[in-house]
Length: 507
Image (tube, rainbow, N blue to C red; front, top):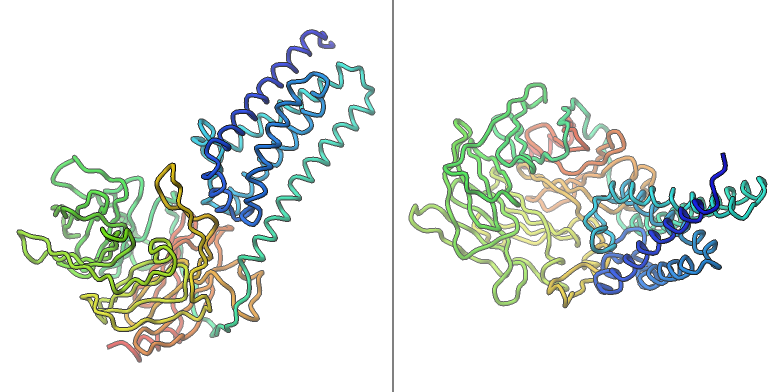
């Protein structure tokens, strides 16, 4: 039975009105917070090279679509433009969900509060509404069946064109990311061999440390939960940390385990909870007058931290000493981190400590440099990874409205994640060298190995993706490497070449 003309008109009017509200709201949200919108586009791995142009054209086309939809004479064109825009936005979210887990969009207001999957579903719903309005409009005008099929074909072409455009942008982005560097890696045969894996079921786990041939994992959503696995990932035990009181802010808390002791560290409060793995009972130590972003346990009485300096508001390294039960001793080492651009993003990095050598290592994310010190942060030397990026490639922008710094576009990451064991520094590099297959780079992560005693690059090896998931972080203990990949922890046996370097160079 055919719909009555009046009912069709009402449906078209309602859908058009909803689209007008959506586009006007989205456009105004972008324009009212235009500076932040540009920064967020600059951070996108798909659109950062076109952030300037897109920051103006997107709200412009949203406003044009709203105007066309508001005028009955041009509503047909408005609906077609609306369909094209919604397909582009939805395809963008699809690529973000599948290729980049970190880039937010600037839709503003309620839409900004949505998760990526919810936003994807929301957009799909509006695509269906738009298609419905287009078809009802053509039925209302008594178009023939062939003409209706033609409009369906036209919508399909528009949809594929939008997706194709974003695929093209992705290719440009990948070419930029996988730019070749003037260095050559060495890949010895059978450097590592996969042994076993353990399904964690959730991706909220992180590596907290190793001790007594066991691997320990913390959980970001359950900060007091500790998962203990044996060295071959066959047996698991769950522990619950017992705190002296329940009035604790768990935001940003990190678990570290070393030498039969555990440490719950929160640099935002700040405080350190400490206890033993024998009973998992904690006692706390407040650190007044200090906030820090990351920390690394040296021993039972010393922790290395990174915070912002009071005078320059730049990253600075320091030590916390708990040897005196009544006071906490702080010592800063401003000479260690060297500013290149802003002193915050350009000095961002990861901390590691080798108990075997009593050496502390700080490795920068965005340049080919790492720092080696003793356990009191006295500088030993500044080393370099084999990558040629000696200066961080960053664009930092100050947002006056929010009084904060932000990256204006994705930073070129040199050293993505890393680990240390005895004298060997393992670095997950983000950049390919000469003569390396880019296909392999999409299927695996590369780990470069350095000897921090001899100051030499030794070799590289691959850690292959699991179920399409890439390595996120890893740790090395004894003859094994443990990697978090997706919802699993995977163990790899280190080959004889790597183990030989450990035996020869470790004391």
